[in-house]
Image 1 (cartoon, one colour):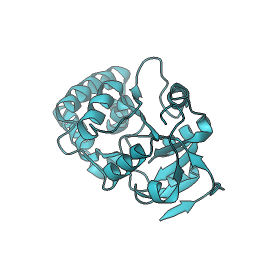
Image 2 (cartoon, one colour):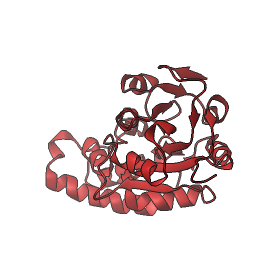
Image 3 (tube, one colour):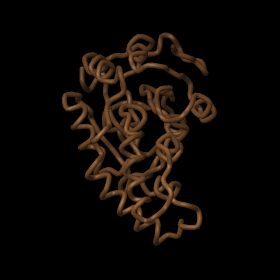
Image 4 (cartoon, helix red, strand yellow):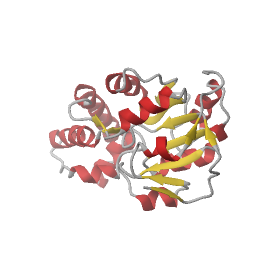
Amino acid sequence: MTTYLATVSPSAVWRGVIFDLDGTLLDSLADLADCMNRVLARQGLPIWPRDAYRQFIGDGLRMLVQRALPEDWRHPEVVDACTAAMNAEYAAHWADQTRPYDGIPEMLDGLAAQGVVLAVFSNKPDEFVAPTVRRFFPEVPFVATVGARAGVPRKPDPTGALQIAAAAGLAPTECLYLGDSGIDMQTAVRAGMLAVGARWGFRDAAELQAHGAAVLIDHPTRLLTDFRFAASSSRA
């Protein structure tokens, strides 16, 4: 099902799609949760059920760590140390259980076959984004895979999304941004892109709608059936 929350012209033709990564293309919840829980357990701290991490993920690794720590442990030096420990733990285990969501490979292949510009803009640390994309989507011709790094503000700042569009020769109004969180929807709105909420991800429809989603889709292949795409002029 596709739910339109704002007026979207049925004649609109889209030339680019920018994707969030965790909770949108990949179900990475188990690996992120298990890695953080091991960091907590080594400190003798209580661990969280996996589902709790749905609310912790999306603002970058340091914020995930801060949210997972008990409130009286959230001193900067403790957060720094636990972030370093989480970074090391995740570097060793990021692909243990992570997998693409059902329908994602088919959606990406269908868009690529039409010559649509494809890119990833994530708050995941940049050093993990490109290897993750290469591991799970080696044949997909992404024009950019951008994570959290110096010089690119984290979402919901739209700078990264706008830079990707500009480098591909696209106007923001020619692009969709597909994500699973309120942060993603805010990013799309601020960038002037169509905010499309993924209902299969970590957050619920109410959050997506509250933060500006124009469209909600319940399966990745809805992008292929319910939207019109054309090749970018730079790729045609």
